[in-house]
Length: 429
Image (cartoon, rainbow, N blue to C red):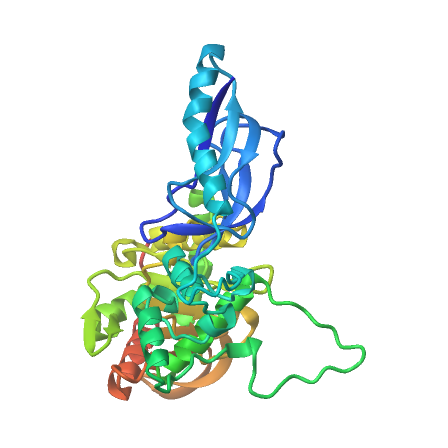
């Protein structure tokens, strides 16, 4: 038998660490190659990690709740192999196991020499890097205090610079504006009566709550509305969906048509495809469209179609269906949830006629499309005005008023509606 290490895999370009959520196998269990053995969480998504070797799960090196860097060993697997290799393999693994045991046995040192109890990060509502955790432990910063520090890193995470700045301000006795604690600690406590049910937020709901509060705090939201006549879109889609299903084995929904119109409008107004970095505006070269997907749990996730402007309508349809399906099955990769430059949300799928969506940071705009409804409308004909039944839909565009004024925000959503109203019903698919 040979012993091999199961390594924390790289799950995306921007993912450097992951938290162990749970082990699906116990020591002594037999596992097959590529079988999922544990669940991990990154700041993007929860996912399962498959084993690279088949055999017996010999030892678990990273426990539930532990943050592990990419490339570190998380378990030892006993595989079938050359008996003579056993001693060598064990000697290779032994130093890593002993080093881990030694690390776990060493007490945390504090800068004040008081030997304060290390912070328990299991109660934290957001992710902290190992470096930030170490600084917090050395400075005896409790998790509750760490949670009040505003983060300037990706997804609002607290960086080393943020923490050192906070410590400097605290030492100087300066007043530091604390980060709002969000829905977990409201200004007015909730009232609880007999018979009320208390439901603990799951990890994803906490993350959504935090990001929504952060987005509203970061960007002054303004929303513009337009109503579009999408009769031609409805007519064309109804005509083509059967052919598309037969040829591609997939559904043709309205979403790829809406995304196509959105892409064309972004090309007309490239200053909507931007991000804000302090007092700098970054105009993005790529057009990466995020699409909000409601999960069976009721939570919301936003997978991203990278370089969406390079797809035709068939490619968009297949990309939309694939991402939505894998999102609901919890099979998305972390990189598929990052890098968006603009987002679309179909609130019409819930029967809503319009909505005021919240911007996905660090983007500056998001469009919501409402339910398509039949309405009597005045139409112009060569013989005069007439009243006819038309298919109408509201579009709402929420944008960051720091960098997007009403002229740009309103014109952009109007242009999306124009492309939908001028849809070519003679086009093929």
